[in-house]
Length: 149
Image (cartoon, rainbow, N blue to C red; front, side, top):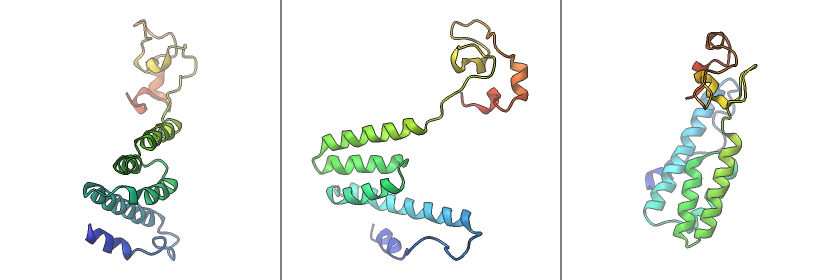
């Protein structure tokens, strides 16, 4: 944990600010820094830390609102500090943040309202889908191969 603290203390400002063409590298360095911060917080939580981490975790979550790891760490810190009701509130915030960004399947053109099971060429009842044919899906950008199963 001490090594992580020392390494993070060396970090100042944004990564590679003088290199405008180094966006990918700068992003990678920022992600590595965030991972190191999360590892340090994880170590502190494992050693019994908690309440003192809450303000830092809230600040990190405001900058990275989709980080599930940060939400989990904040819930653990709140629980360790004797604030289980706030931990449950954070859980609900995490669930809502996730639901706002989750992938939602869409129906294909000319597809009946049998949800996204059309990608399997079957309706929920097991009958063949009356929408566009699977052969035409292969040529479309929304083909079943491009959708998660």
